[in-house]
Length: 297
Image: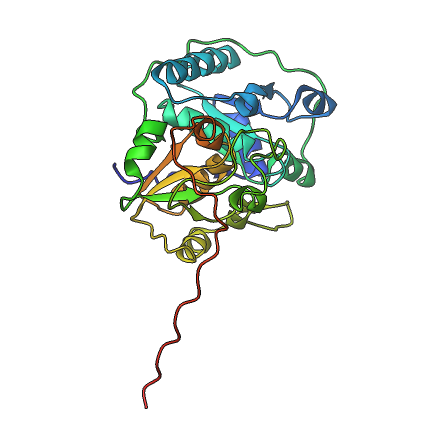
């Protein structure tokens, strides 16, 4: 893969306000309809399906994913000329939903995509205007562009087991330890556990507090977090979570931090756990103690 773009993905609320005033921009609110109706960025289009859509990695599933969102993004007014800007309430409270929109458009080859750093909470904290009027989109024809090489199928992931590729699980700790199968309930998915050989960094660790709410850490801080799990910026990193939302938050963090080969198993645990032919690890993820090093005399 070619190196990741250095174009900033995250946009501050004041920068978004300036962008909306100067360039064609489509702002997309990924929260639920009731929350959107209670107050949103003026002109923002509500698209909850960005978060709720459960994808599979079969050829039929990928085709349906592409078709669904090409129609949805076209209806929202994305023709290729506009900058798409996603937001959620706060980056740590929506399971990465705004970043999932960013990931989907990245996969679909869309040229200009950003995410509001800090989300709607940061917009309000900056004292910017809000609206309760539903925005009416001007539909466009979504461009047909080559897909980016950032999405892997379950068969491709299975083929990577035991190789040098790093499988990075970013789910919450109860899912990583096998106590729960999903954020939707402990037994929502049929199996608990993790992909064989996966490393783990909980997605929250790529964010830090700020005056405008949780924000993605700096590139150096993200690299340091990855170093704790033995992951370097030039490693091939394959992310997964439950359905590709929290992993999208991490995808953005790693891309901003200069990691050169980052992809995602978008079907994630929701798909993997439902195929009994696929291997999983269920033993407690505890390293055995290493023998003490002998000290030189």
